[in-house]
Amino acid sequence: AHLTHMYCLLVRGSNRAFSCSLRGGVCQGVPLSLGRTKLSLPQPVRELTGAVATPSDTQGLPRVYLLYKQPQESLHSLEEALAAIRAYCFAEDYSIEPLKITVNCNMYTKKKKRDSFHDSIVYPHKFGKERRILVFSEEELQENARASGADIVGGEELVPKVMDGEVENFNICLATTFMYDKIKSLQKTLKEKMPHPRRGTVVDEFSTVVPDFKHTLMYKCNPNGLLHMRIGTINFPENHVDENIYCLVKSIISHRINVTPVSFISKITLSSLNGPGFLLVNKWIK
Image (cartoon, rainbow, N blue to C red; front, side, top):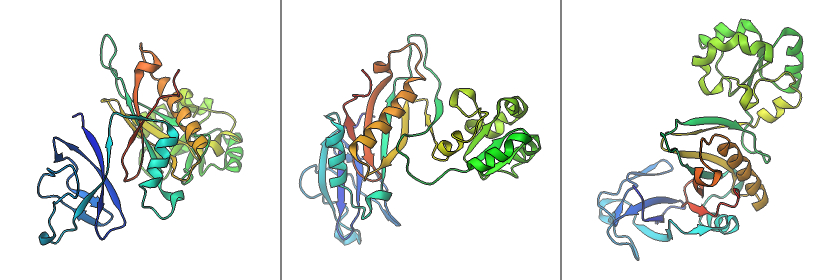
């Protein structure tokens, strides 16, 4: 459904805000979660101005107030969006509050609807925890892989262990060109983690690749064309967010089929973890 407005609501007695969407005066975001507390709105929210009167105090639930109303279709520069996101963020530590991006992709071509797609990406400005890396390589290259920072290193002897689930505590899988043909039986087990030359996970030199993949993130665009991804943290300077978005957009448009880049990505929305989203002017595609 196309939502009319996005709202940021403040709950009395709490230092947290949450976002929900409303259409025709009816709240679409129930039940809402605030930390460990479940807040359920038993009645539709009918009033769109002033204080929202539901839920009532007599039900033992906190009163909800309308704090912010943002027309969904208005476009913002990256600078405006970041300023608004920071203004409505209640996190005490901006360095741990994630900055999220939602990309709407056009999955339809002239002939048919295309399938979902997935890929991996290494942002120029990294954040978050390091990923655990599994490497399949020949014996003579294994020491180099370990020295580069790989967490699990082995050859063909690891294939049955991965297939049986004995080795599963890893986020990224790399393989040498020689071992790539030896592990094709793991395709159904590894799924998105399966090494592939197109994603840069089939390599013969580990010294520069492994440190980059320690901060690699996976993304997936669903069949409806929605892609949700973390782009950084709220304390990132504008130029860092800009460069990370450009890197992601460049990766996404490499999956287009028979459409121009401009028509493939229809919307880009930036938001915090619990705050409202802001549509961005797409300056990353000329």
